[in-house]
Length: 78
Image (cartoon, rainbow, N blue to C red; front, side, top):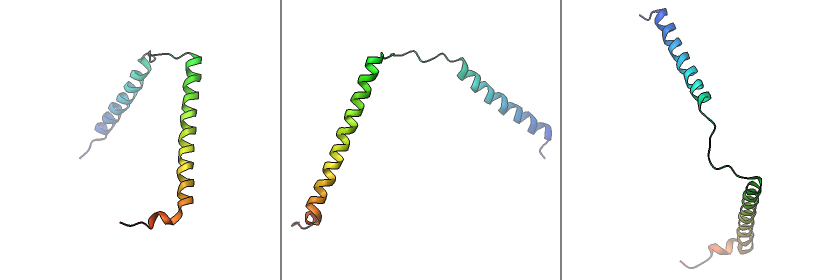
């Protein structure tokens, strides 16, 4: 049979463990890595936008080519 005190002790252990994890996270220093300048951030953002636009254009191109070719693409000798 389970004793109520055992359940309370287990709950306290879980609570302390959860609190300990949160304290460990709070004690960790901020990440110190490469810090980008504003110019580098703008450059990275512009490059990401350019890649996204090129990818979108490629998708649209493939879609248009598929529409133009239509179902005839399936009528070919095997």
